[in-house]
Image (tube, rainbow, N blue to C red; front, side):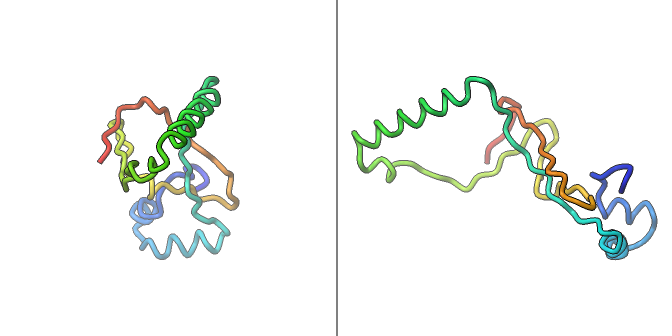
Length: 114
């Protein structure tokens, strides 16, 4: 795990011909814990101005239409990147401490929203 912190316990178990339970038990004994890798959107210099402009626009719309919140649809959706990144829930880093790593994600990468 020290060589590749993004290696999965399943892969390590398979490579060493032991069960995943044994791998997890050894990692826990050595004080390694799985930490979730957090993906964040890359911010540009003009993003704060654009966010402020969006907020002001929404506030104006809410003043002109008090029922606007009833006309907005919030959906439970999933995004799949076309570059191969699909399931971010299974992305873990094994480490003795949480290194607070974050991956940058470009907003304009090709994606499918379902």
